[in-house]
Length: 326
Ligand code: MTE
Image (cartoon, rainbow, N blue to C red; front, side, top):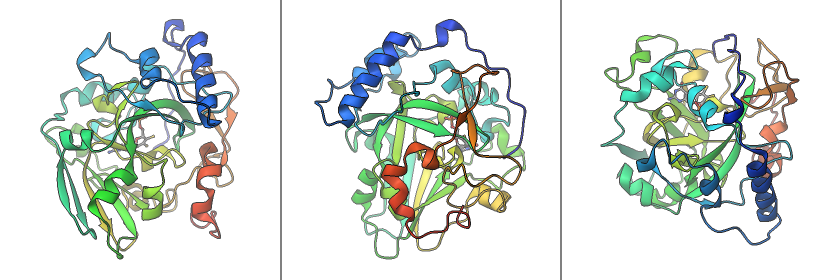
């Protein structure tokens, strides 16, 4: 990934989620994690939906017990989540995608599922939206560049889609391919990556309940710059593993060549699990800056193994040397 100096990032006081909102949210999430009755569906959306900006885009989901936030985590303000983006198909600067992706056409849209499956299928986006019950999952996200956010996503586990297409015994990996349309995506003129943007997971990673097929955030359909109309969200891996605006999902036998791995294999391994003990060759991964919350001069926070999801995912890597398989 390119190194660039982060812009000064001091949010307006009005952009910061009010303390009453996030402290109540945290109590509810902790209760859910402890097995106490879940709140009514849509509890999170009710507090955070941006209906005043895009009423037509509402996308509700049931609060999920998989939202395991830490004591210091609170959702990153909507404004930061939607204006500080990496989406190289729409420019290399963080501010560009929010403007340049406005013209992305997200209807009609299909996702082709093919390869080593018994039931290959082309899903229309409206079919995908109804495939399984929507959930609100508040996840920590850690970018390989050293910053992080907390995002309330809406979607369902990738496993819901996987079981419907019935992978066969040769399906060891899953490849996720982003739209590759130079008429709509000015960034494709750049040779920073070999387009299309491709990411991949081992099939057990793709089937892990935390792995989310996401259609929305903050209770509304994904803004284009965040990967509309459908994207991956893999919270224990660096953000670049979470491919945006997916048009193809391919089940394959061999480990796929991914866009960043192809561009700089010594810097971006296939696994890319968040790991404070494995530095990027050009910078440390031991700490991170939480966007929108801490102020630019605030102390960085320690990065957690698997981005804090070790209890849920460490077992996927039992016996592996995570320094070699980085
Ligand atoms: N997907 C595509 N197609 N193109 C990209 O440039 N950037 C990745 C990932 N998915 C990227 C992508 C990176 S580096 C990060 S950190 C996350 O998207 C950022 O997601 P966000 O903008 O929603 O925070």
